[in-house]
Image (cartoon, rainbow over all chains, first blue to last red; front, side, top):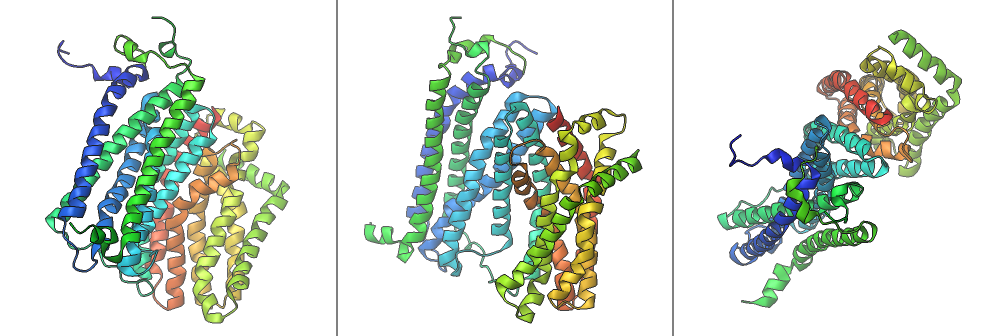
Length: 246
Length: 61
Length: 219
């Protein structure tokens, strides 16, 4: 390796990652704030009123990004957990645990906003369509992962058990989604025909994507903060963490 | 800018502002939970001098 | 060795047959609760029957999962088993088979009797039995993953339900889909094939995940 390149592997050690994360957090926080302001501005003051749904459609600017974050973060969580398990890399496992809370919160937001959007758009508070039902099941998967990790005292067992569960979950998600699609088509007559998202004007898409970026920046900031606390909680015996003089 | 029209959101104020309100409460709550975690940690574990130590320590992972 | 394992579990289950029977009675009672809660109207019962029987089967399975590894874990037999040269995969497969024979098969056998309570036709009852016959192995196989992950934890029973019920959803959908199709007069073939595919997939992958989980929980 040339002398100019960075040895990235050193950041896999919690001791080295901790200060790096600390430096990154303020930047992500600033980006979060800027992007949220920009996205909300475009969403509320630039995007036009929808022809079919009036002003109610503006909920999608947060509902869709939240739903996507819930899904992306679950996959990311499973990937980190898998890496932590396969390579015995503690920091990767800690990242998985740090991500789980944020992913669960976004999934919950997506369920609530989905319901609040459904009422004006289709007249009911809840519909058992493939998307919402799959999001509900994703919520259960998050709750399972978080509960399992909370119930295990030994951190390494918690890490590895979580990894098995998350990987089993991630493999099952397509199967679950597929089966829910089938289930939905079987009962099509009974359910209300769901109108899809309104056809998107460019400004609507822009607002949604800007807010998606905002949610990503937020997630990174929050996960980095949380993983630093996890590091401190788990490594508090370690000498590098002690207040003793260098 | 017609603010009353903005706040009423075409009659859908409950749903639209409710959605963004719930989001704000939940994400804000997450941040507050992290602040609480920081305080709990400060009580339990002395704040470390990690900022200065990081780069020259190469512990295995 | 495999045969011995299965036989051993069967004998142990026979010694604790009260536990096993309790699960069966739970299944019967839960199924009977629904007409009491919803009303005896014939058409309604026919509509809800597939779902009710299947959900009750899921819940009854949940209750029995702790038994797959729990008893052996408590008296340290599990540690011994894992130390033998026998592959953990085969040990898991053996125990899962024993669990299915003891906890799931009785449900399959008694289900048609319960189905009669709901006014299902003979044809639909046959499909119901077939769907349960195909689906319950998946309940055992996937359930054992949850059982292995939660070994020795407090409130393991509730936790296992939380972990495993979302994973059971495809089997639930395919199983009830098959019976529903029969009730409606359409062909249940597609659903049954999906169930069969699920069994095959579970047979291949689930014991592997369970072995990994066992090693994680036991060390």
